[in-house]
Length: 150
Image (tube, rainbow, N blue to C red; front, side):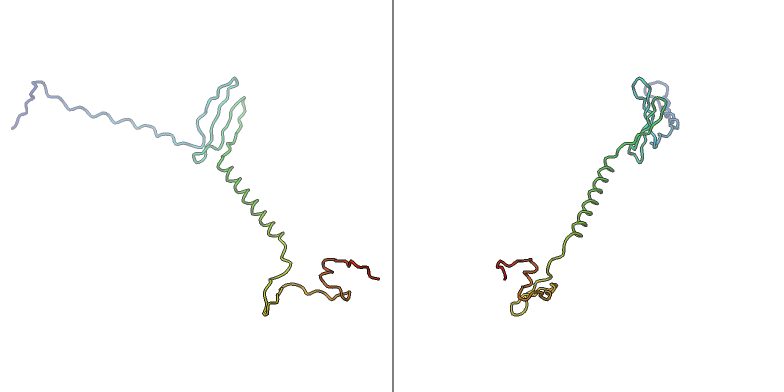
């Protein structure tokens, strides 16, 4: 048998007891859609209750003078997105109107034929001349003769 002696000559010290386990703390309140009531300074007592959605403020209930009113908060991200969408729709509508109002070309495709002659496809041939000797281009331009015919 082995004996252990205390070198200081004092009575043996008992080990330090373990600290007691902390009592179960109440769970931390989870942030809900309605925040705490905030007292507002002023002569008529007023209170403000913020309302959030997915962590973002969306409005607040204002309690004053025995009345409760809800005030929305303007979300700048949604405002910018709505403005960008409206501008995009306006630009697309203006482009559609510009394309719709564009006139077709007066003549079709201009091509060089064999031998160097020009082919104008899509052009109506001139109608028969009601006046002999008057060219079709003079009728189109509504040209008048400079000499008086007698």
